Image 1 (cartoon, rainbow, N blue to C red):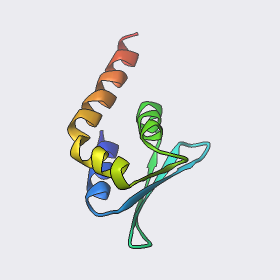
Image 2: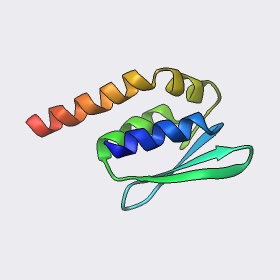
Image 3: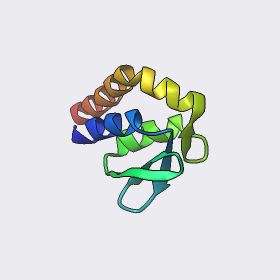
Length: 89
């Protein structure tokens, strides 16, 4: 999934992750020092739900962002497992 790789790159270069909900999916804006560094549109509902669960009112920052960065391998494994489970049903 290319979206997971783009999220990982964005997390390394940002202090805050903002989630904006659209009909097409969830737009992720990676913010560093008040400037948006990168935008990604997440169309996968499993990934969007996983990011939403990590956020507080659509914002991931501080300790939540640090935990997501440090446990990103487990986060991606969880998302991929949920997607595989949905495909097998």
